[in-house]
Length: 302
Image (cartoon, rainbow, N blue to C red; front, side):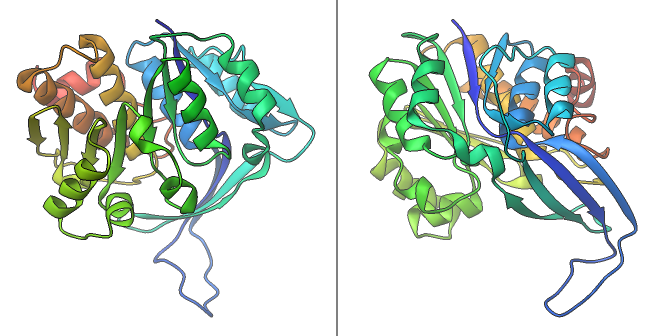
């Protein structure tokens, strides 16, 4: 079984600010850094850190050498990554004093994912292989369809939410990963219970991982509903927390097998993923802060 993370690669321009800038305001920043990011890169590295043999597919520009080096350094295979002569995707990230963030994305090469490239990458994968997707690249619906036809298993993190998510064939996804914002947009509901009820009605064959920030997370698998609380830590920056949760939880699902999960295993998976997501908020920079398995186990108390 091979694991493919087909997603975005961004250069993150991170500005530490006193407070989030409001319309009409000019604000000086307290600190500036440029870092490697993008949900695809973050999740690929999180899965590699968790122990999976992980491949990354995506497109970077000639200015994306930092991203290539980061993936290789963290043990991710880049055999199917492509280099373009256009600018790499990037993000403008405001981080306030409490560690919360606002993010503005420029797609760049992430929006050059065409059918030909998708088909070429997927030709190296087959029935039973795993694909992990996010919504920072284009043609995600096509990737889902092609993976379904090839009988691959798919995890779709429906972030950031836009009309492409709503138009995606989520009923053909094995696992859907959403937070309360994405879940509300997909379901047109705001209450947690109503969000999940609506999603399960719309996508009855899709399992759901539902993240609730510091409150923890839930898993909806077959007839199971499992919830585990989050961990209380002193957060410095929340960038990458959701991606770390995705990588850690997907690793747990793959560890036990997609068809062999029970309530106890799901609790273990959620606890581990919650701990990983909490730890990454305690340091600056998603990739540099990616927690090692032993650090996660230490926080859990094992």
